[in-house]
Image 1 (cartoon, rainbow, N blue to C red):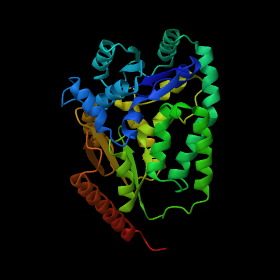
Image 2 (image 1 turned 90 degrees about the vertical axis):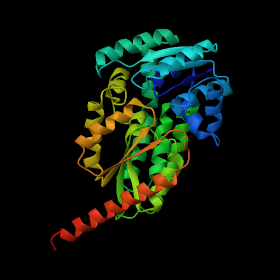
Image 3 (image 1 turned 135 degrees about the vertical axis):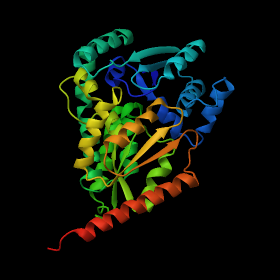
Length: 339
């Protein structure tokens, strides 16, 4: 099966039904020991210093790994992808645009999927069959999410890693399902995390320093029990059709859809505080204004670009935030009437 790169989550069922092996270029980028290497490739090619590291990393991965076919999401993700697509074409790659509808409308999504199927040489019916095959795998991802927030048996990092990997299922959805099933069995044999730990929500795109972020939070008395975008990638809420599934997917649409989903999960998961990650030079960082005006929970906004390790400054801010949450909880507990 030929490989096809993706710049973010796309209807993976279409790619699989067309006979491709999907490769999430973002996961390859940050999953290597030296992601800076890919950035240097892009900057030597002329990408500016003030360009998002994800865009540069995707370009570097394509060049380094000889990926010739790439799905570039031109609407519903990053505006820089439009020009990235042009550069990839200049370099001789087959860059295929995919645009999410402007609104989460199932009829518009069905039309989009029909056109995408023709481009890839498959059919909506074949993709629907692939959706049904993936149902069991997505149920496993939903089970892992429950183990994280409901049963306190999985860490925030584990939740992040398994859910974010559903964008391409590591290139082999059957193996992904087998491995996740084994991991879930391991989790069920663990002792639960302490009940008094701080419960955090992580909203925003995955951080470039995610590998260090989650363990650092846990060492200081907190745990992420809700990963917003990663959970959206996994599409663990059932839908009756492929069009419905990608209409329910909140990330490509307006911030209103995201706020509705986040608000529900904040209440359900008994969240103490929110960490909002923003990527330097990204237009989505402006959404922080709206989030702060909407959510009533304490929120810490952290930023990153090409710093793949937590800086001392960010560590200090996280520690101070967790300390503040702990003091808030202590005051609340102290005020509760005695039984």
